[in-house]
Length: 459
Ligand SMILES: [Zn+2]
Image (cartoon, rainbow, N blue to C red):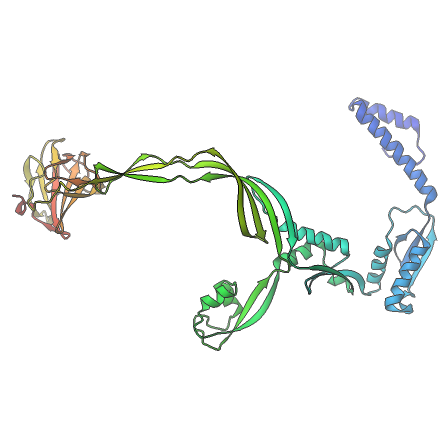
């Protein structure tokens, strides 16, 4: 349902009745008041309306309110373009209701565009470098503000309060006459400013320069340097050679000081102590470390997107960090290799060293019931205790002078990698893990990696 200037109250009340069921009284009053205000405004507006329609080459351009507005526009165009320029402009008074008027500046701009004339604009200068041409000073100021906001720090978990934001360059605005296509809108101007400009410079290679030096000194990446010099082999440069540098320089540099509140983790410390009951080479975590949590309040200074300075003004510990405590084994001196090996297990030799069924058997097999102790054949350091494919659970011990022994197919391991063991010390239990048929120890003696017949070393 639409209301006209002259409306029927009965119709209006009927309409209200219809919707009353769905609305509460407050909303209803608001609707009625709104309708009445709209109707009154419309009527007053109609009585006062008198305006001037401007046409260029008989094409309507828009309305201005007063005759003096028209005169000002014509004089302004005459002043820069001469009397002839205004010949195709005409205007007429009208009593028609007008929805929106152009300001004098807007109307002049539209007319100038229509006539293909230069239009009034504002150029933004940073120091003495022209940055962008925009419609007017308001737009220019809005752009500067948007550039500052572009560099405001952003964070997902925390609070930021901008204390100050200043542009390091001296910003000035100058009135200029330009062609309409030279004028940038707010988004494009902001984009241009933050993207910066590429300044092409030439660089003459000096004695001692490497391509890395040149890239780093000029704030470029090697790929960028290569891209700027497609015809030069960058890896072979000579003294005196000319290289192109494409240096990106931002139009504006924004210094932002912000107060930042955020929650951070406190890394835990690690404390070690020597444990003489633990074998040398063994490290055992006694207490697991845990990061703490703190709330920080910092004042941070940024230049564009780079952090220049950070000052913690307040820190509140929410949870303390827990130190990690590690026991470091020192036990070593009592175990000295004797140079004589002993049988690693009770039992009988079920397979000898050498070729059997066309394959080399690299050790001896000692058959014994599952669970029988496997002992260190000689003192030494356990270099491996764990699972090896084929060997199953196995232990390897290094004895010095390049000697190493291996005990395979165990059902259980007692020794740990890194541990020092004494001759005769229980290191595992007989089993049949890995590639094995029946319970036995597979025992190897190696010297500097080469397999030896264990029986020749067992005294
Ligand atoms: Zn074997």
